[in-house]
View 1 (tube, rainbow, N blue to C red):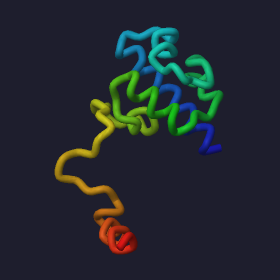
View 2 (view 1 turned 90 degrees about the horizontal axis):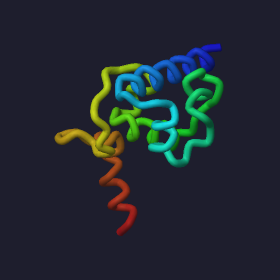
View 3 (view 1 turned 135 degrees about the vertical axis):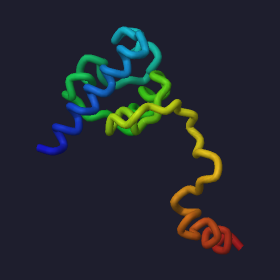
View 4 (view 1 turned 60 degrees about the vertical axis):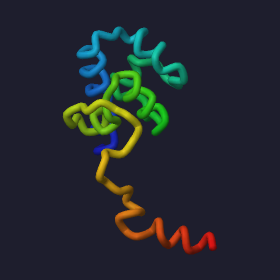
Amino acid sequence: MKHQITLANFGQNVRRLRLAAGLSEEDLAQKCKNLKYGVPQLEAGAVNPTLSMVVAIAQALGVDPGALVDGSPQAAFSGERPRGTQWRGQAAGLDGARADADK
């Protein structure tokens, strides 16, 4: 049941952000060229989008993918990590372990 609530929240967030961006459903679909499903189905929470679809929608709306999933304040999506931060693997020292394995 929680999974369905999450999909409904995702759909509500897509709709809210789409309207805030002044886009029609058709506009969003055109910006997301590879949408498997229609925007109305996504906004209704009737389908489970793939991760690549979530990223494509976020990029089309100019928000971070997290804004679609949890409704967090939208930040511009750059596809890059913020300056001064580390990927989880780097923080755990895994980048060094991988470099040593390559030797």
